[in-house]
Image (cartoon, rainbow, N blue to C red; front, side, top):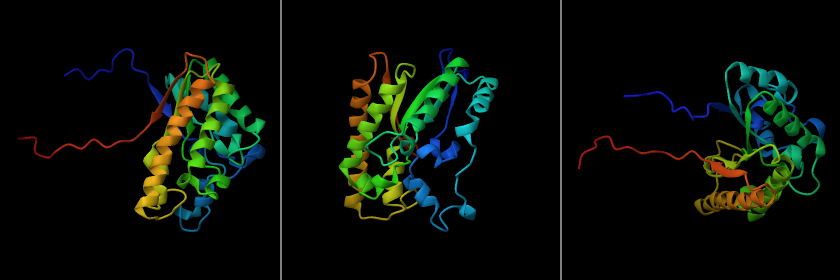
Length: 234
């Protein structure tokens, strides 16, 4: 058995904005449902809140050098929706997008291909308060946000993902209560959130394509299960 990776295989790493950036309220950024979730006592171990965290927001140059030293050729990172649109919709926040422009330029200058995830769970609090993923308006708002981001980055970024793991920001947050916003709702409402998550992908895909050059590729990141029978016999 040959276990070597094919020569064209792209080795990389991936993060989410909420996981690594820190400085979640810096430069005019708005709050997210995940920040609100973490602020509920007992939700996170030791009641920790990632306001500083790994601090990639300020240490991105050092982080890129670490990636380069590891031989990483691609970096998938997400954009914090509340940084770019603090209220989820309305007027964009230029300082929020400036950070991602600097990060993209730094990656390219060091031979690392940027892969952008438009949405990795951190929904602006203002949209959560209006229903969050229970509402189709959130799907439409994400498409507008995705189109704006693509119009500003697609001259250098050629690979976009619309959303990350639909089940995690829908059922895990609105049925299981394990993720933001930490609710346990009825099956009909949960199914609506899943539908709206899928709708958001479709609308965002069209918005990115409409605001990007033809050479841009768009997809989504999902986490399906592969079920294998214990006894593989007829």
